[in-house]
Amino acid sequence: MYEPKNTFVDDVLPPALPKDFLEATYYHYRDFPKPYWKRYLVAKRFVDCRQAKTPKLIKSGLNTKFFVMENSSDYRMDFYDGCSVHEG
Image (cartoon, rainbow, N blue to C red):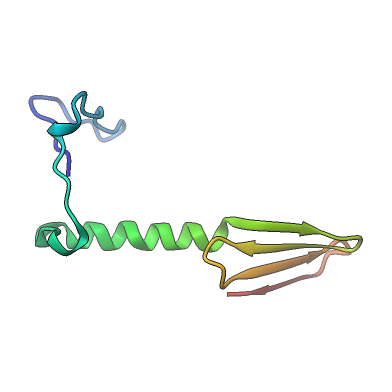
């Protein structure tokens, strides 16, 4: 976790990144401090949602376009006549 020291925190702009990588504290998943668990779970939910909506593979055919999403369990097939099939 990185918490900037002696800087004004603005709600619009994120804090500047540390100039020295030793200013930040790094944790392993098993050693993550309990007060940050909720933030981690919110971030994980966001990443999972992005992976479900981001195509990993796109295959185009004569009548259709097929998408396999990043999490590999969701897919979508769009037909050029307007129909769409999706799973996930």
